[in-house]
Image (tube, rainbow, N blue to C red; front, side, top):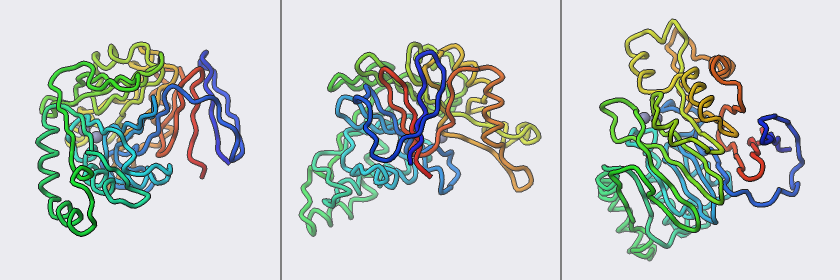
Length: 321
Ligand SMILES: [Zn+2]
Ligand SMILES: [Zn+2]
């Protein structure tokens, strides 16, 4: 049994349940699947930061943190069936899965199967990172070419770097526009992406503090997928934790942004919940309550493999548990 939440255009929310095999509606303009909703914290229920966006017959992945190939396999998507990977910034929780996505993708098994170069698009620094990944794993590449007769094209990379905001991808009627976000003075470049297709748009915030450019770049979007960070009040003021929170958006700040953008659905991903041995992390209810101090529109707290279909309706489907 799969639970479906349907959000009407008016922002009203109804929960309906459909049985397995129930006919889906017409193909949505854009389908978003949260592959990983974690912070850097290793945990089984939330993989590293990553979002799959399907539109115009393309599969685009935004960031590749820990565990992305596993989440793709749970969706029956071969790792090699990704058309392009987009990078928001270079923090390890957003890029540690890239070598796995690249190398598992070129294995000629049902779960791999990529026969064309691995396409990666990202801000300044992406080329250097990919060169080093290529060098770090050159033994695997060379061995498999000789031993398993994999073609040099399958293991190759096709990397594009951009230095300015604007359209960075335009194919099959799908445009991806990069915009800068503020993840802190030293964590730069850091970008978010707006993906548009067939009159609809989805925005992925990337990692950012409260940022006017994100709000401006999100105007008119159907879905705003947003990072968030939180700690209990007694922990939030500690030096280490306040520095971390200072690089991210607090729930009440995110709510302010949601209220100004008024998307058809706001969804949290990259959920940073700080804790120490003595002070537990806040709960999801705490996160929602804080957000509700500034925003009363449609909101979902992301979970791994949550799928959001965007078309005439915005429909949310959670992984059956
Ligand atoms: Zn970051
Ligand atoms: Zn992050």
